[in-house]
Amino acid sequence: MTRTLAALAALAALAAAPASAQTTVRVGWCAKTITSAAAPYAIATKLGWFEKSGIKVQLVPLPGSTDCVKAVATRDVDYSVPSIEPLAIIRPQGVKALNFYTAYQGNIYGIMVPADSAVKDFKDLKGKTIGVTSMASAGVIIARAIAKTEAMNPDSDIKIVVAGEAAQTAALLRSGQVAALSQFDTQYALTENAGAKLRPLEQANAQIRHFPSNGFVALEETLKTKREQSVALAKGYAMGTVFALANPEAAIRILWEVFPQTKATGKDEATALHDDLLTLKARAANWPPAAGAVTKWGENSVENYNKYVDFLVANGVLKQKIDAKELVTNDLIDDINKFDAAAVTQQAKAYK
Image (cartoon, rainbow, N blue to C red):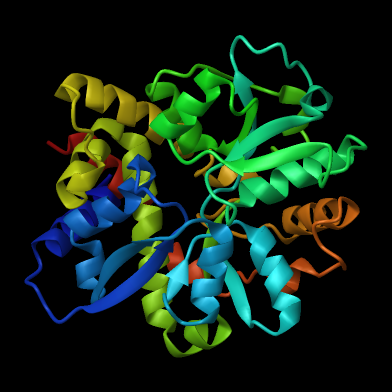
């Protein structure tokens, strides 16, 4: 108890620390719209954890994971949080980048259909249209890979189109212009909030559910020359996830304060809070280490990544096998985990 109280005092001191020179760190947000899944960044900003480390995080919306990896490669952003597939594709081309913190230990992607759809199995989607958030999204890769596992030709047996996000996606489903979606957890929550009830294709989704998903990616050079900054970014994010898990409502209210554009317009506050909590809950299920059978926040399971690479190779996404040790590093994980999770949890529960 004494240790926890001391840690709480230290956290309070961080929040009260005077402003100092901060380096703006640009982080690629791999979707066009910032959602409640950004709560960890907002919390670390509001409570001064980023500021104490001398950084100010700027989220940069990008169409999808492919663009997030490219933006790191071209140095348009310092870091991004894409799924691993685009990194596995671009790494053999000479881009020396690594995932140094797995943000989502379980896979956030999967196939959904309208709740009242006659589609019961992925094979029922032959000749039909599947909607993705953008052609740069990993949802494209996932849909094609699953089609291959079902002995379908991803080039001719399915048609992948851009369905946009949330309300636009819901409208296309209602009109029948798309029969299914290959998007991700928070987008599914947003689509349901927009009035389109969804049902997962369990057999298809079971193939990828236990594979790791998105993580913090940076150039190897950045991880060497800006190690402290890289640790500070991921540590603030980790602490923010612990806080959000302990007090989701406070997390949403902090999110609205730091990123006011995330608060829905045209809804009363109670409805907006309810909807954003659903979106946060969808993402939060994949945050904890246990979701990836690891013990530390952000720890990269080389075994899990290798299994995913094997799946991607077997289904034509990757042309050749690449060792997961060339894609991920745990070199920063111990430093990232140097915080008292119990104290953060207690601070969250006491937050007003």
